[in-house]
Amino acid sequence: MNETVRIALTALRANKLRSGLTMLGVAIGVFSVIGVMTALSVIGSSIESGLSFLGSNLFQFAKYPVINTGGDPEIKFANRRNITLAQAYEYKRLMEGQAGAICLKVFDGGKPASYDRVKIQGLTLVGTNENFLIANSYTLGYGRNISAEDVELGRSVTVVGQRIEKKLFPNQSPIGKTIKINEKPYQIIGVLAEKGSNFGQSQDNLLLVPITRYFSDYGWVNRTVNIATQSTSQATYNQTLDKAIGAMRAARGLKLSEENDFAIYSNDTMVAAFASIAGTIRIGAFIVSAIALLAAGIGIMNIMLVSVTERTREIGLRKAVGAKRNDIVRQFLLEAVVLSEIGGLIGILIGVLGGNGVALYFEMAMVFPWGWAITGLVVCSLIGTGFGFYPAWKAARLDPIDALRYE
Image 1: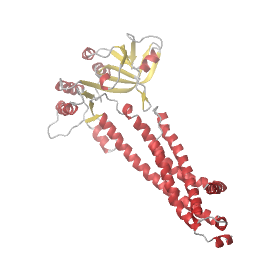
Image 2: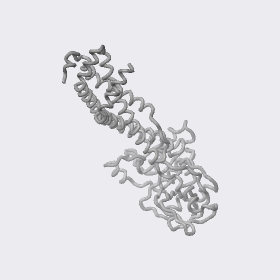
Image 3: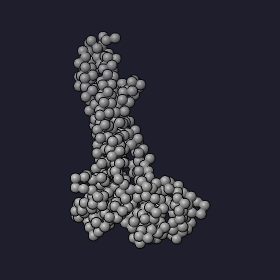
Image 4: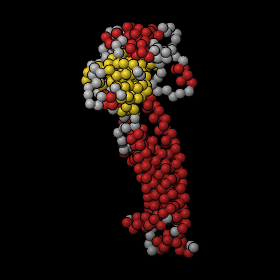
């Protein structure tokens, strides 16, 4: 057996370019599926922190769905009426005593904030109420949160994220200091605890202000309010959701015959939406890799048939000195499997590196898809064996006398 392995490896080294090109074909096929699966595994491992940005037992009403694929549906959503602050308050009134917490929020990205002579760009301004921390899984670092009284009176106060604190107040506490947000003054009353990044986006660049002050300072035009509602427990979640949908329809003034003109989503729906998209990507990756691996398998068969023809005298000589048909079959099958496996290993390595490039880009934890890697190696073995069998069988069937006379 050791002699068979040595002869097989020697034969492959004698045709480095041809062997390399054949392995490249296998590597491309394996890379196409391993790379995609690694990237999906990276995103999947971060899905709880990445997509599940709502708190526990929460659902949300909004004008737009959380995941929109574009096209005609996008026009439909854009033509929906905005959810106004008055409608949000009416919903909150109708749900009084029916929910654990209700958070109203409206977002505005790309805002600047400044203190003294230091200015920071690209911040997210959030008009909200006292329940933002609960609804979005944030915690307060120090200071105090926005209160119901702040919202009722429309006070010019703000709770800032860690990025703002570090940039504008590196050597002092920001509590009680007045900063300018888009040239409007706000007194800092609290600082959020650090939350890090999600999908490459910082979660520490928030500026929370009372939603009433937000609308007073920045106007009502083209503003739509998102409403997050928390049930009192997981057991009452479905009951709370049913009541909330009715309350939202009433607040929007919808008739019984009219369909909902607002989106409803939760952590579960976001996870399901991602799973659906990931499933489609997996199917596409399988199709591409199957085609590539089929082509690679044909290439292995072709190179092995050429090898049999070129080494006819060698095969005849081996048979003449006592090699059996099974020895010849094992030799050529081993060559085919080695070609396929080395190509597979290269494809897995490049695929894992490429897939984890997504992790580095979006600052996620890197993964190694052991299951897919092992599956890839098994598939490569099957390809090598399947496509290498006929050339091996043909080599074993050669007549030694005719093989020795072959020129």
